[in-house]
Image (tube, rainbow, N blue to C red; front, side):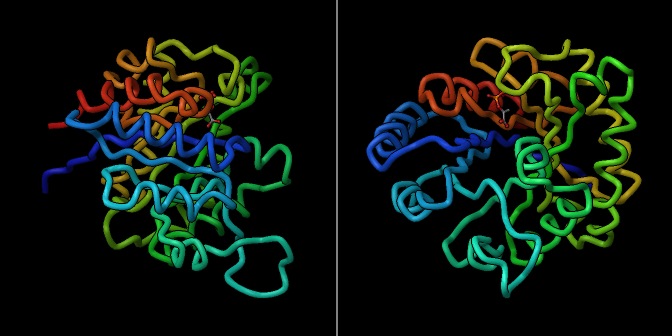
Length: 256
Ligand code: PEP
């Protein structure tokens, strides 16, 4: 079987936006992407803007999704949003386990695994974030941390019918998020190759591995040329239409 992993670029807007700013950003982005050879592209705005973003992106090549989801399916979980609700809205993606959720909202490796599973079961694509802190990196623990974070996810997803095509993993070193720092290309490739091995062993041959952490128009081409980098999860630069569109077109170079 030939394995084709279509490159993917997803923008994580975090807690940014307004009706006006979202409209201006997406109109500008769609204009810049028009007539371009594109990878798969998505944006993840805050919950309240999902319907607006969905309407603005209807009939366009850009998909959309949420930044998190409840690990529970239904019930007495005030303030939480289930994967089936996100499916009802028309989402395609759900980011789970972003380091800001792990840090500020107490999400654990096990919570993240449950979120990934409920997302997948609802017919949506989980983008599972993993990555080490600065201290862990300095202590040489990067691969051990990734293994620890991935283990419950791989267990939960065992037996995924489409060999992982509907699952995405994003490697995001915490120390690279929003800091302007990135690992060396060799460092990124080494971690991605390690993740690839773990995915292959779990039968997830089609799963794409994104790199996230200070991706910009100026470094996207180098990062996306690495053999095991299937695209990017983009924070700050996703709020700038010119930067984000340039990052998207850099990932299109991986199209076969
Ligand atoms: C992120 O928050 O997922 C991220 C990668 O942020 P930034 O691109 O701003 O580093």
